[in-house]
Length: 132
Image (cartoon, rainbow, N blue to C red; front, side, top):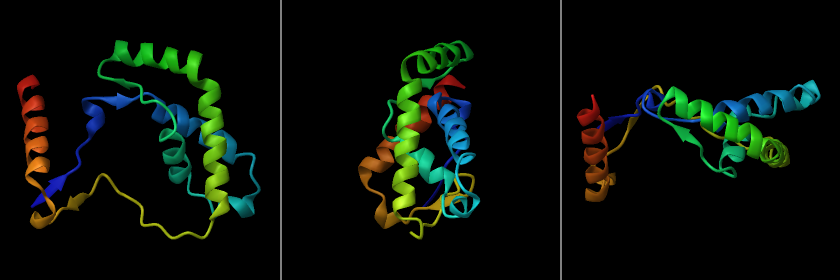
């Protein structure tokens, strides 16, 4: 059985993702070029996002409200989480990791899929079909 990770941002999106990405870019500009080649910005962003609350939006108005909230309440936490992410990645700069590519098909073998997984996938699919 194959599943495809679709463009989830067409339905909902975490407002913190672009804010964290911008902060990662700002921090990377201050690092020496020799160190930059050992830092994967995606790893830093994932580290930071895993330490921050998710702020999802499903509409333009919700996006704007969540963005205002993030800028007002979470700006310093975003900065700190990215700083910690850079420190964590720098501690292990030669670690090998195979990056995810969410635009490609991800194979899931049938024996790895549980009945619970199938029910969740079906419920998720039905939810979006009803709204289409």
